[in-house]
Image 1: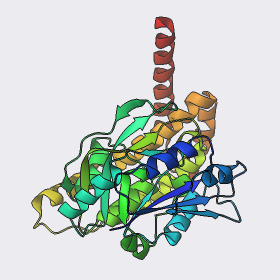
Image 2: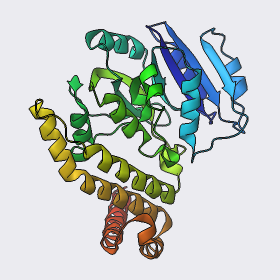
Image 3: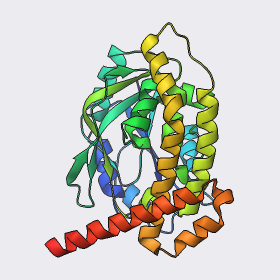
Length: 321
């Protein structure tokens, strides 16, 4: 069993720490593939400071960019030779036990297309600030989907370990603008037939910082991605599963009933984030472009209300300080 740990790299700030965490694995049979997305920062010096034959380093001739970042994920996939692949951010980390725990999970539940590591969220100083929710050790794809829709599960692309051959057969990582929703859909496609197995201890660390694509990207790109997501979800849920697995069938029905609410909540959150950062006047832009982003006046109004609530909470916090 060989793992391919891949880093589609662009930022230098945490790259050394990221690489160190991978090379510190207790399970040794892996390759580390780093694909430099034509970064203006000096990534090469950082990578060349490590002397480990498991590292394979590539530099893109042209920059994929944040909008097409999934293209770089798929370049990483094209270079990989392991049985299983992880695609993680250049600022994230693996705990030393991560690959070993994955190996145990694969031995216990062989033949699945995707596995998941419990995740800790860290700050810029690598302090643990919160944890991902606990998940069943084994579940089907509709249980996964319902967990995201109703119970607000948080997840990132680096959480998941994919069967490399299956991922390639499925066309690689699912491409959406700025990878918004690409992690979710890639994992659902991989779990469609056999489900997923979830690690019960923390193995992956996601770094929450202002430099991440999620936090820094244009809201318009996120809304465009949401429109494509909505199309995919509707098509995916239009196929009624067998009633033989009554629990999964129930999860499918619940997902089908609530998917539009999930999409609307996500759109509302995107707009409210943008109004919080750029001011209430931006609401006119969204009202004017309702058809373009497939939103309505009510959603823009709710986003304004949500933004006012956030600003009031922030004022209260400042007073307390």
